[in-house]
Length: 100
Image: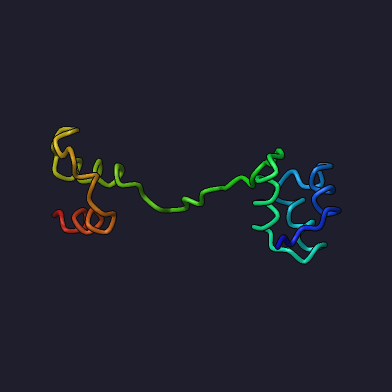
């Protein structure tokens, strides 16, 4: 049993939903979930532009930045600690703090 009537499918086929914002509007107007609308649009093979995601890096530090800081603290050459970047951020942060 489909939640979509033939009229609803026809509206989708006419290009009512093309991106996340139009999917939200369509979902609210038809008492559907946004995920359902997006899935239906994709299953019909229609063009859909997903919402762009923005990463909030803020003041976080990457693992490679931590490894470089550790190498600098130890006065060792670059790449001397190859593989250390596979450690967790917490472990790298702790190691950097513990270096005299």
